[in-house]
Length: 225
Length: 225
Image 1 (cartoon, rainbow over the protein chains, first blue to last red):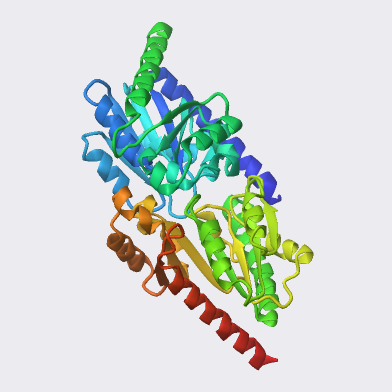
Image 2 (image 1 turned 30 degrees about the horizontal axis):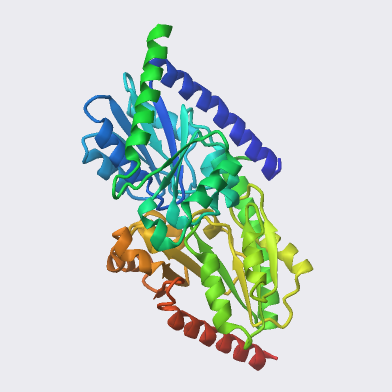
């Protein structure tokens, strides 16, 4: 068996488990976000800001994926949101089986929103469906305007692209319009938000959109039952 | 054959080809850098600044690794340095075989320095020896102070760690001392430089160190013949 066919088998097995995860999430009417980015683009900061805005009105939980440390889970728990840490060791992405195992210990019954924060990697996580409802990709403006062209698979598969650290745009010499145009070239359909988790600029639009997504999902789940 | 044993076989095969690459580089007395970082940490900007400083006095070449586009190779060639582009498609790292194939088309005879710029990924490239003399890891200050703890394998295996974008330190609220301490915790021995490719601060020390590395290697090669 060669490496390519093993990879295909791995992805097929992943697809089956992801389908089962998705069925579970849909039964519960839970919106599930697979949150992905390069290291240090600000996934956890975005998550903190989002949870603060949504908190109190929704039932929320987070699954954190990291190679090492539970630093991110600690940050989330300090906001009062339940968080489960998956530590992958040397594995460069989360897969559907890791999520299924987490769900056995960390039940999601009755949740409005579950966010799964993936390992910081702009390549490998794109290949692994976790059963999510939405793929959200965060891109730091400080990474440069050409990133969507250089990492097209991740951007192409995104439902939502959030350009973070817009406060560093001028200092880093990156043209936000060029970055937006490059996202659009790779993915004309994704929802696109430009935010700064540091200053708060732009977060309102993203959180309002997410509230609508949660409301639509809850209505769909109610209608179905 | 399971996935783990396939992975082990892949790494063993990679090791054999990397050993052959290394033998070739050592025969030529060529210093070979495997340049790694997360997406957008500034590998190509560091390379441009380094080549500008070294140019004229050394025989230099670059192999660029990217998923898509030859944007980086174009940047290097515009400085007058020969550059060969490896486009990996969906593969998240360079391996020794890709480099060996490049060397068949892009001979390195008589070079003082060959820089292999890896795919932007702070995880997977760490597992693949290319036959390099030096592993140089670039980390953007804007990624946050905790990155060495969260991606320890990459930092642990580095010979040199370059903290780039120090000009964004204050604006991004990242404490450079904390970042340095976190590098040291994971890797007490690596050479550590803090630079800004934008302002030029700190580049002199790095380039002076690299000149010494090239000089030592050339002397070793001369002595051996």
